[in-house]
View 1 (cartoon, rainbow, N blue to C red):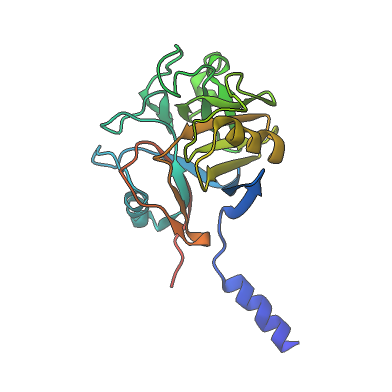
View 2 (view 1 turned 45 degrees about the vertical axis):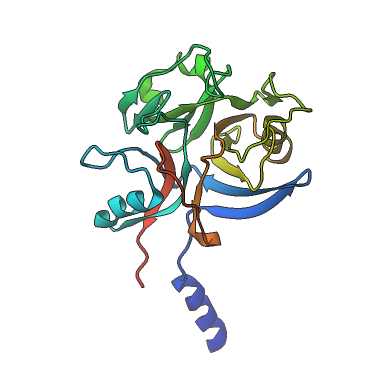
Length: 246
């Protein structure tokens, strides 16, 4: 009886992770899938208190430390210019740094329809940009725009070709119909848009999913020992959790 009680107390003492990340395979390709519940503290990060772009997972973690908080998971969250400023809409806790870009344009961002990842207090959403523009700003206090949409109402983006030869490391996000769960996915090797979007549509079965970026994609998932390094980023999305005592 004592050994059972000791085991239970040991489990209670172990740090709990606010996000579950796992390795997965779909159609012969490997992916890292991180599942986040809408009740977790999921936040967007761009600049620190001094106004300078944070740019790295380490900088975000350091900015959280004075409040006894830590970064439990993070990934890049949308495209950005050379100065790390967002290409499209970026809104953080009601403060908007960049407005919506609704017109078609060059590159993946301008491959309409694109969309917005919206963080509400208890519900998450991926919303096609045209639909997003019909919402009141208060309905989406934190938001980041990117493109293209990967899945739209259960269908792949119409410009994704099964026989495409354009392959990159890719990352993106999909959200459940009820907004209770988001899945952040990153490919382990270069894949096409069609292959990547199919993971969200056919494996995760989400009705809406959004592309974040390609070769610059990086992931911070300490529960699986992953902390990708590389060039400084623009917008970052991450789960904030209480700091764990040693």
